[in-house]
Length: 570
Image (tube, rainbow, N blue to C red; front, top):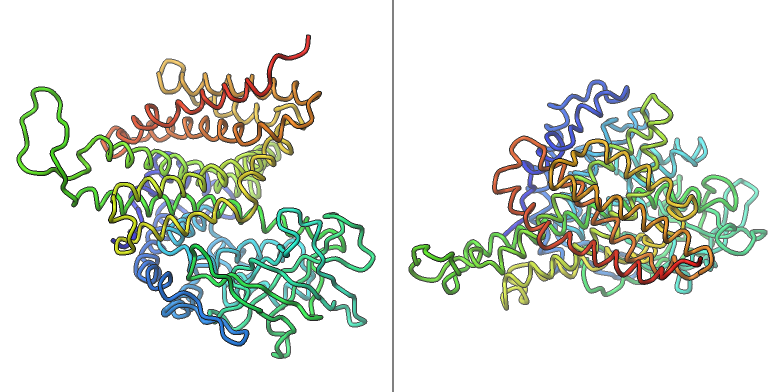
């Protein structure tokens, strides 16, 4: 089965559950982007994904990328699909009109990349960093660099990379050894080796713009001494820059995406932003990438669910258990009628639907943070993005892999062979838990850097804002209110205990992020269930699975964290 963009479900979450079109049209830059336009763009993007990208999923995995004498050839059809993609204007959806973009809300880009990742994760790795590179250059590049590169990155005519990792410097970027030496003409000579570079070399576009972290000769040690350089594959005069692909990695998944070892041999580059402040510029790119990765998780899980659901409706095995007194059925039943299979499918859908609402809400908050006329509302939106993005990245990439594995279980032995394509999704999904900051780093970022420094005040304010729309008279809402109260109390307890136990926050971070994710997931479903039409079995079945099979984990995480805190002194 080939992935089909779930346009009706996406429309329901955007319009009926979130009322996103009305919120966005109230912002000045989107005054002309009414509901009809937003939904039309969404539907057209779904058609492109289904017709041009989804059919390349299997060939991309089986043919893979080829490396020969420094050149990389992508799988059959990849270049043609990418050329159609950028020429149709899809990379430029959320870019500013003055840069050649369409000036549409970010959430439309999020929807597009969710569908692209579900349809063909390997192919989508190529354009996945475009908007982050665009934002980085737009906010930190010089006028000359922007004039030369910004429009072509915005349009997608030229692809971009993010060159951070080195053999000895993964999560600890302060160990990077790549060097940049200033030249008399204002350029730099950049030298060093970078690994795990997605799309470092390929044939999709003529030029590739590399954003490279490195260190100037006088730079202090550690991450605060890093600078950011722009090193193109082709120089402005058309000559080839001294940027070389040494090899591509043999990987567990993502065979359609070349993961490159890149060598910079005194390559010509230009500084982006201020010297020694490269991480500040790069984090604009990385934060956008982390929300994209969260949407990858949701899309991959949806793709796995679609395959498992279709198979379960066709495959007949045994007679399904029936309530007492129900008439006996003749012959083997579709396995979707067996409770064990129904449970797997409904649980994954509970994660998909709730995650979709939270991710789209975060996309709306991104635009509110940029464009809302009220400074207090902009600050509130920025706080939401800061707190929720690491939760989404970690929780939904975790569920993408483990949930896709559960979906493979629906197929039995047929899932373990290549014929049905479910095993590819499991392999492709695994890396999302690692790149753009491992999930463990996301958890530490949430608790150690964003929650504990203010004693949980920002998180408490976020939870209080979500309480405002809940009704304690409804059982589901009352359950969410309880979880919010317990989470706030637990946060205060952790903050107090961490004052005298330096290791506690790092020990507790993973369980804490999971508890926050489950509380937000419970809240997301209250918004879904309020929307007109949510009483249909399509929505009521995963809602029931959520409460029976998913949310009880919150209490387990709570107990684990309370045990870690132990009794407080005094």
